[in-house]
Image (cartoon, rainbow, N blue to C red; front, side):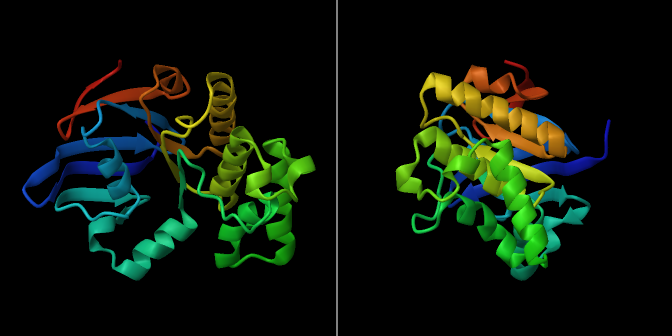
Length: 224
């Protein structure tokens, strides 16, 4: 197996008396794509938030890219998310006053890059998601599928080690959703970017190397 980008052992998380994660183990190799399925309330989104450092786990070990996230302070976690982690959401979360290419460039403003390298990355990604002719359009001028393409390009702009995707096709029709899944698969493969994909769609699981099923805060089994 390739070097793990994530090594999680015995993760627990509770909100008050509600135990949401119960001794979750997960290992993800560099460049591997894993789908996470299960009913609403099974803990999928909470696990995704913990993997992204947005929620602290209560117990267990969570190592990302060789770093123990439980031992990291707030500034270090913010730097980790800024430099090595990206997310794709169901509702895109584009900045409405920025054009498509400005949305893609936005996370690069926080990195130590020359303007030439930043512009080149944006140009390359706009071409890869086939939106160069729409690069000056605002989000409200784009279709849902186009907005998600911008979001994918934005997620890849920092060249992250891992993308966390929460129902990325949940707000799209089936044809557009299938095209978005194909794009996510091809670009994460090209950049060797890991992917954890939370989904209710069995169609979406087909772009992943493995599928894990969650219920009541635990990973029950591999496969669907």
